[in-house]
Image 1 (cartoon, rainbow, N blue to C red):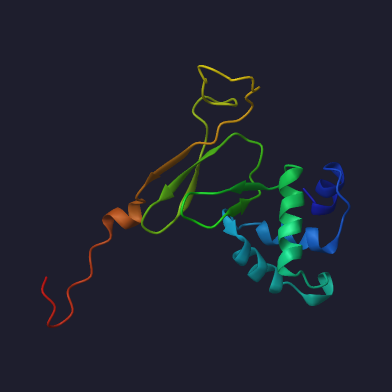
Image 2: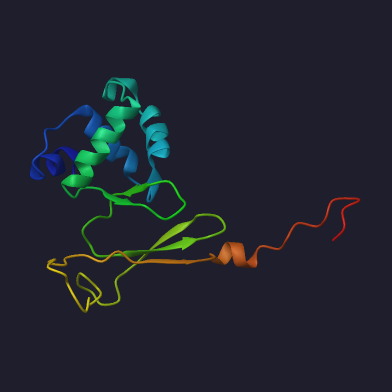
Length: 151
């Protein structure tokens, strides 16, 4: 979908900065704000005016609030942003390299878990993160010891 159409449908004003951030997130699943800033900086200057660091966070907050972008915050890692929002998926996170992979919900509908006591909340979402080591990290052979180092 065109970013201008998506922004209008979400009730946001179409700005060059919002379009640039949405464009930067295309093909950049689980990107940090720094990675998004780097991708935005690589866009042609005539397509937008410069986006400050605070401006970037404001845009990301706006896009997250209206559901165009999903924010994930794996423990011990930088906050990540993705365009895959509102589809009830979860994440696998590698403890060694930080790689994040999407996992479809096994149940299929939110909130994926049944809470025995809701404590007065109407539950509409559960965020599940599995932690472990990715295939690359588990199969990577350790580097040989350097000369003079005890193995």
